[in-house]
Structures are given as C-alpha cells and as structure tokens.
Image 1 (cartoon, one colour):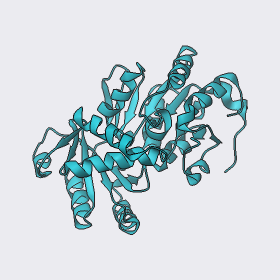
Image 2: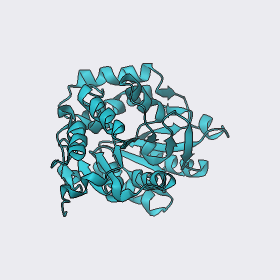
Image 3: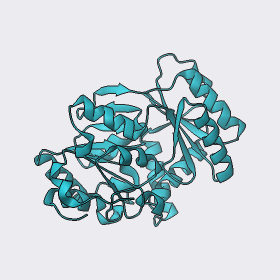
Length: 299
C-alpha cells in the first residue's frame, strides 16, 4: 500500500482510536503516556473520538478510570455517544434479523452473545468468561491466561454481561434495541462459511476483532461508515482525520480516514492496510502516533 508523507500531519483535526489492543495495554488500562498524549491533543484543538467494538458501558469503564472525556463510537459503529454520554444516533438490527442470524449461529453450534442498548446478554456464563479471555489474549498475545481470566471476571462482576436462560426473553421485549451479535468459535471453516453466508444476505456487516470471533451488525454499523457520518455532522473532513487500530474491524475506518495507523502488535495483514505502523499497545503506541502527528515527525 502506498505510504503517506508527514506533510499532511498539520491538517489533522480528528484522531479516531480503537480500544482493545490499541489504546488499552495488556492490563486493560489506558497508560499514563497515552492519557497525556490524548489530553495534549485535545488542548491543541484536535478532537479525540474513541471507536470501539465494545459496548458503551464497557468503553466508559476503561475511559472513566483514566478520566478521559470524549465522544464514543461503540459496538463497531452501531451507536454514537457524545462526550457527556448522551446517545446521538444508532444503526440497529431489526429483531427479525437478529432471530435470523441467531438461528444461523445455533444451527452451526456457534456460541454468541447479543449486544443491546440495555446491556450484553449471554446464555452461557462459562462460555462468556472464555470469550472475554480470548478477546484479551487475541489483543495481547503475551498476556498470561490467569491475568486474562482475572480481567474477564472483573468485567462480568461489574455486570457488563447479563446471563439469561433463553434469548426469546429478549426477542419478546419491544423496548430493546439490538446492536450486535458477537460469535466465537475455534473452527475456522465453520466461521468463514457463516461469515460468507450472512454477508451474502446483504443486510449484515460481518467483521472480526480477532481470529476466533465474528461481529455481526447492521450493514451500516461499521466503524468507517459511522466515523464518516459523525465527522460530516460536525462539518469536519475525513481527509483531516487519523485512525488508529489493530484488527480487522478497524479496516473500514483505515479506508475512510485521511491517515491510517496500525499498531505494532497488529497482525501483519492489518499493518499492510495502514499508511503507518506505530509502536505496540504495551509500548504506548497511541501516544507515539499522536505526538508524532502533533510535532510533525515520522510515525
């Protein structure tokens, strides 16, 4: 991919940042260096926007710990919240589409969770724990399993995943808004076939934040599409935006933004999709990219 030159740095007005494997280190924290770099950018008039596959509650948990105030595009672009936490707009799944996707996953015997505006729901607590562990280890391959387990249990204890016996309880609740189905399996063939089948339906966007998961959303609920809508609503240009991420669900915002930056811990094929590669998430790669932009240095 043709790499860009640092001459465009002075034009940057917005920096869009992924969370897991990007802004967060292997302890699932925002490092002091990343926090300082974000605050420095904000003081310079550059808007920081978090763009994550997490639910709003999960995203805010980590951001609140670091006292970072900014807009959040969450659930892969399915929902947008202002810096004060007010819902701005969303791209939801119709209940009939949720039921169709759920039936497809059940037929394939693929475990999945359902993300809604009222929380994340799971029918299997043990698999939910293992799914979170896999997310943490995928984003941080050097993380030991016990530490990943501790992080997963913390998030479950805080109520970030709600256990239900049957998803029919959700389908019969007219007040719920459906944002995403997050599916997990170690069977690559099964996952690839499922992704292809649902994509061909032409009503879903199917992406991934790791080698063993699928993220199924409304076709319009993609990071790049929502980032574009957000910036247009504020009269800002995509050409003056920089996107930082580490995985497949970040590619759409890489393509949308004027400058794309992959993390040093990102898979090689993701790095190939970006204009620049910064340091790893455990080396304050986000801070390195932000400060390079602000100071006109090569990333």
